[in-house]
Length: 127
Image (tube, rainbow, N blue to C red; front, side, top):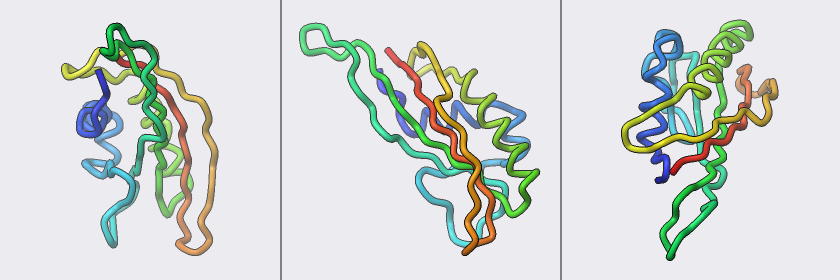
């Protein structure tokens, strides 16, 4: 029913165009120290039970954020396009997916680290 963290990561990295760009660099919450770029960090904002029958959750709506990071703005944007493409096609055997929607995309720059990043907010329904 719930799209588990490991399932989400695996499903995203199964998209070849994304994994070709970032390898295995798809990290929950934060990257390791001194990482290689580009990379993606992600997290669950909220997972809300949508429906329940006899106290059994039948569907959930999960809201994720994904940040694409790189020192090069164009490389970051190219990786971000593949993150969106991967998200809208994710599948997996541990869950059944309903709709997948990208809610917002924003470009940001961190002057302290000299990193460009794109924040992608998206939701997925599972049952």
